[in-house]
Amino acid sequence: MQESAAFSELVRGSIDTIILNVLLREDNYGYQIIKEIYRKSGREFELKEPTLYSSLRRLEKQKALESYWGEESQGGRRKYYRITAVGKALLDENYRAWQSVKSLIDRLTERMEEV
Amino acid sequence: MDDLKRYVNRLFAGYKETAEVRELKAEVLSNLEARVADYTGEGMPRGEAVARAKSNLGTIDLLISHQKPVRINRYKVELLQAALLYTLIAWVLTVPLRLIPSGAVVNTVLMFVLVGLGVSFLILSSRKSETYLKAVAPVDQKKMAQCRKIAWLVWTLFIAAVAVFISAKYFGSDIWFGRPLHLDGPYRFAQVVVSYALPFITVVLPLLFNKAGRLAEKYEVKD
Image (cartoon, rainbow over all chains, first blue to last red; front, side):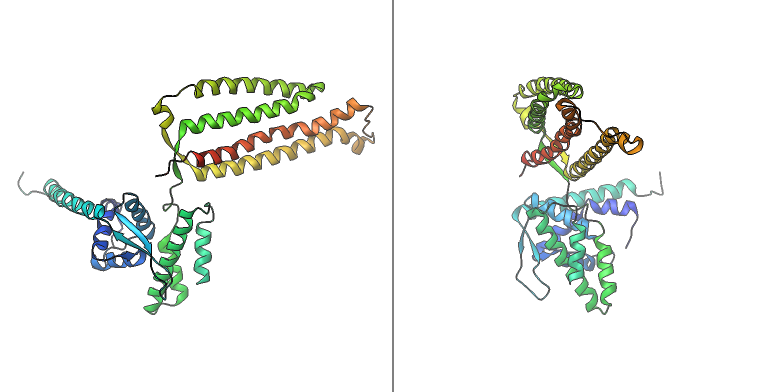
């Protein structure tokens, strides 16, 4: 897991999108979201819990997510999050924005052989 | 699982138990438990699992914003009104104390404060424009609670110090020089009583801090 300031700074802008994308597949609760991101990143990136909570709260405020308490399981009650229509639209929008930013930054930061 | 519960309670120790905080506590605890169960499931000793889960959580300060949006101008006007009322009460209470020189000084000072507060209150409350009344600014409620605690602490120390000082003044000559305190008449007696009672009038200051906290909640913008 990379820990440089530049790395965290770049990832931070996309945390909301990453979480929305995890929840697009199925409703999920906090620790499982972290695990899923860790798995999908090829064990490269582990989301910190405080970052997760602040992102979830932000998304819930924007009505991109809804939460509900799950049934009592063997591990106790868990708070699940569900993506809303607003959230899906936001995910689409963020995804497109990221795609164009990605190619833009690539073009602007590539080290050219010829000047 | 009790150690995790205790840990979460400690994390949130400085927070007021609002519905929001209670729910976040339950969520944080359930995720901690899930993480510990996950680690121990992989064969990690429980002690180590708990320690790692805790270190991943770090500090809770990022989780809850203490910066609450408050209708700042309406808040200020009502706080000023409260200050005005408290000072008025203090002034009325000290009117009879004018018989004693120190009482007269305090009463006069309070009158000037009263006039000053009254004028600023009139100026602020005369502004009625929509934008002024609806203006929102963040208020740090944790810092406010800390200030409130400090205000009460300072006030208590002040009262204690003044009481010691006054006692030294009146009874010191008895203790150190063997000259007992003479209360030669009701005026002298009133003088002693007043000099003890007078400092207590400053209780309006920490009380105003309490009021400020309540008003910040009252004018918080909830969405």
